[in-house]
Amino acid sequence: MNAEDARSWVRAARHIVLLSGAGMSAESGVPTFRDAQTGLWSNFRPEDLATEEAFRRDPSMVWNWYAMRRGMVLQVAPNAGHVAVAAFQQRHPGRLTVVTQNVDGLHQRAGSPGVLALHGNLSEDKWLDAPRACCEVAKLRAGSPPSCSTCGNLRRPAVVWFGEMLPLAQLAAAEEAAAACDLMLVVGTSGVVYPAAGLARCTPGRVVVLNPHASDLDDAADAVLRGTAAELLPVLLED
Ligand code: BV8
Image 1 (cartoon, helix red, strand yellow):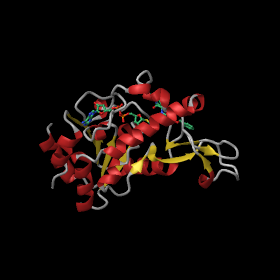
Image 2 (cartoon, rainbow, N blue to C red):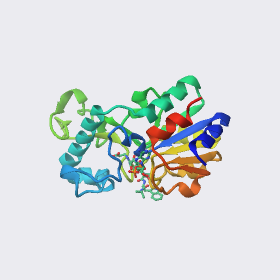
Image 3 (cartoon, rainbow, N blue to C red):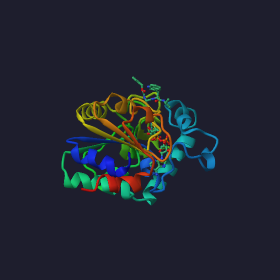
Image 4 (tube, rainbow, N blue to C red):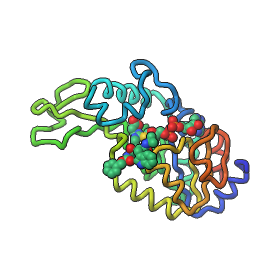
């Protein structure tokens, strides 16, 4: 099957879910989780840094890793893949739902409405421990990370770390969309992180994987398109 054939599936689909991972943003210049880490973090697997335990063990190292990623994301722009998805949604309101594992906000910046960000958002912070009466953002003590100037409660990135539960509202809406769709486009994900990858295994809809390399979800796919997000999505989603 090639992109042309898959286009007929897109045309015939009443409701589409686009499940995206880090590969969706690769052509914008955002490294994937598989890509080698650089600098201070080159000896760490992302999975080892993106945990509460790692943050409590060395808050400034993990905070600075996120600060580096935030800085990088501000330097880049949505690519032709993000733009094609948002344009399809503008042309066909309510027909495509974006469910993303990405915390970079590039789908949202491309103009996609109602993005279900399962793993949170890199540009937001929250309190590490349940906030006390003294924990006011207005009274933060500067630092990496900033903290409550009274009790020392730390600020942390508002992302979902490994071992943490996903935001229930987003997860429930994503499961509902996956159960109701007749086509799921799985774009730029290795398909190893759950429960996100499970959506592609549970959907009754046809599953099309878009990935230049083999992924853990190829066996769940009705079709696999070997190519990149920015190359394939404009073709696939063109009316
Ligand atoms: C939880 C935010 C429980 C932070 C992230 C079932 C089975 C096995 C394990 C588990 C299971 N259930 C739970 C687990 C444990 C764990 C898990 O899945 N572990 C894995 C590693 C085995 N899951 C969890 O911990 C989840 N929480 O289960 O809580 C619970 C229950 C009750 C009460 C309390 C707790 C939380 C998971 C979320 C973790 N947070 N991100 C941050 O970003 O810092 S996950 C993070 O890693 C990303 O968000 C993403 O999800 C994942 C990386 O995967 P991908 O996005 O796919 O990226 P990757 O680099 O791997 O691959 C890129 C792909 O793109 C490649 O295939 C490549 O070929 C392709 N590509 C490259 N270029 C392009 C391209 N494709 C297209 N175009 C291109 N140009």
